[in-house]
Structure formats: C-alpha cells, structure tokens
Image (cartoon, helix red, strand yellow):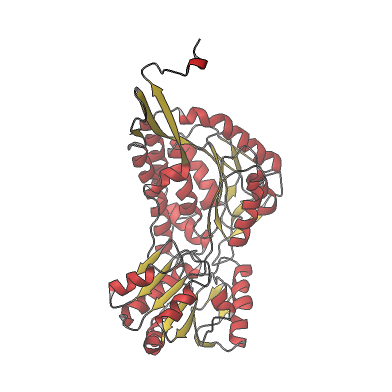
Length: 473
C-alpha cells in the first residue's frame, strides 16, 4: 500500500492554488476505516465567478494552439497520472470505498480517455460539402463550445470527470470543475496537479471544490458558461437544468436510472446469474448503470434465484486495501440509510423476502437478494444505488417488456438462448442502451466530437455572384 500524504483540496484558478473563501477544514474520510484522509473547503461564489471569467479569457488562446501541440499536452496529462499510479490507486480505494479492482478500472479509464482524446483530436473533424451554387466552396468544421462547467459525482470521481474533461480540453475548450464533496481529491485536487504538471495553460482548467447549494449552483447559473456537464441523480440534474436555463445554456447530463436485467425462459442460467451478480454488485451497486430490477420469467425463476444466492454467498465484504475483498463499504452513512431504511425495509414490510444478506456493520453492507418483489415495492420503483438485488417473477415476455419500459433507464440487459429473440426484445426497449447476454457498457468514441464542439459552416465564393438589378450599383 502506498503511504498517502494528508491531502488538502484547494481552489485552483488561473494556474495557482489558493484557500477557499467559504467553510474550511471540512473532513474527507477513508470510507472503510473512517480515518482522516484530508480536508477541503467551499469555494465562494466570488471564486466561482472568477474561475469562469478566467476560463473565458484563456479559452480562445487554447483553441488557437495547433492540434498537435494540444494533443501532446493532453497525452502528457495522462502520463502525469501514470507516474503517480501507486499513490492514485491507494487514494481511489480509500476515498471512494472501492476495491483494488475498482481502483485499477477507474484510473485505467481516466488515462485511456485522455490518450483517446489526444488521438482523436488529430483526426479529421471537418468536411468539404457539395457546392449548392457555381463558384461556391462550402466547409464544415468543429469549433470548441467555449467554457464548460463540469460537476462530478462521487462514485467514479476521476474517470467520470475525465469523460468530459479529456475531450473538452482536447477540442479546445476551457473547463471549470466542481468535484463531489465526498471525493474532492481524486475528482479535483489530483487532476489540477496533473494538469499543471502537464503544461495545460493557466486558466484553461480550474477547480472549485465545494457544496451543491453554493458552489454548484453558482457554477450552473453562471452566464459565461457555454455548457454545463453533470453526472448524478435525476433530482439534482433537474435542478441544474433549471439553473442553466436561466441563461439559455445547454446542459449535458447522465442521470440515474432504474435499470432492468431480464432473464427469459431459454436463458443460460449460470451465465445469467454470473452477469447479474457482477452487474448489480460491482462497487457495491453504486453506479448509474448498475442492474437494479431483475425481471425473470417464472419457469427460470427458481434456478436463477438459487444460482444468484449461491454466488452472493461467496462474496467477501471488507476494506479494499485488504487482499481477497470483493465489495467495499458504502460511500456514507447517509447513502446507506437512504436505501436500507428508505427502500429495503419498506419492501420487506410489504412482503419481500430476504434470501440472503440484509444486514450491515458500520458502512459494510452485506450483499442482499430479495425475492417476492412486486412492481409496487420501493426496491422496484426506485434506483437503489446499493448492493441489493430485487427479483421479480413474471409469466410472459410481454409482461417483462412492459415492466422494463415502466421506468427511466440508462442501460438494460436481456438474457436468452436465442440472440435474435434478444434482439427483437431489445428493439422494443425504450432505452438508449440494451445488451443481449451481457451487462457491460462502453463510453467515449467518435461521439465525443459532437458533445464538446459545434459545427461551423464556412462558405467561400470563388467567382462573382450576379445579384438582382435592384441590388446592383
């Protein structure tokens, strides 16, 4: 284990670190041991305003840097994270409550996103359009949006920040980032240090740690932002969209979803059970693409439930720094009590049965399987965001499809022995991501260009145009 220093999450504006003007010395805890990792403070509204104004002033110069040089700087950003690999793996485990496997995934994703963005930046991002009149050359090119306000969640603070930060910087935007209060180091302080070491110009990347009501709201409402990018709950996303709308800013959000995992009657039960356990319980179920509702056709229900319970019974819960740990602690007591007291206990009171789990010690929550879950119970109607697998039995495929489409979702899965049957089912699911016989999602790719630039049309007239007589001199 790497021995960590005691961190302090500072405000980072115009290439310099400074103390926050708001409340200071707020504790950030190791989620497994509850020992102090460091402190952070709340950036004031004035500091947020200054960060945005500095970013606005710096952005045109950054956009004017040639693509090869910007690519080099973004790639060096990745290199700076790689140089601190051992430290950052330990930090991610302790600050997010993840396992070593989760930390490797998160750091790896962050580095990959930077390298991919650096590569895509130098690829063709424009087009010569067909002429619509004689002597006309029409060009289409990608132009940076300007200044991006980035609000980062606590579950994957580094990689989810980088999903917007990497392409945002690469394509010539400036960024003002607000990390989550629970994870201000991996999601803020470390990124500022790495960007500074990589040579990102002063003012192009700024970090304003703080709370949602002051720091987050001030950032969302700022009139000089050209995009607000937010990952988190639907409720907070709705508030941010309202704040941003006051100055007609576009908002890019990835919000929570009550995702479904469907098992049809011809599914490979062993494969479905393994994928369900992984999809539902990875990082204690605290991801936006976690499999939440498990909807199983009746003829497969007993075998699927038995296979799931057997797999869950082998899982080991503990400190992610220890060997042979599968699940770590819940991120906070507030989060644990939200799903346990607000969702699990009321569902049990309504008739759900605990097949395994359902107890906790401190923040260590035993992975839980609930059977007899009906579509009216809270564990079915709400996103759980915890290590709980509710199983609902249905009689027909049509009933399963109707239940899937009842709620907002980000990602759904369907298991079947016939891939074409799975495709037919997926085509009827009202979600932008459906997996057949899998539960894995990908991010990034060519879509990044559209997300962090806008298209500019340039028309060049190479021959004189003949205008109507009344317009001629």
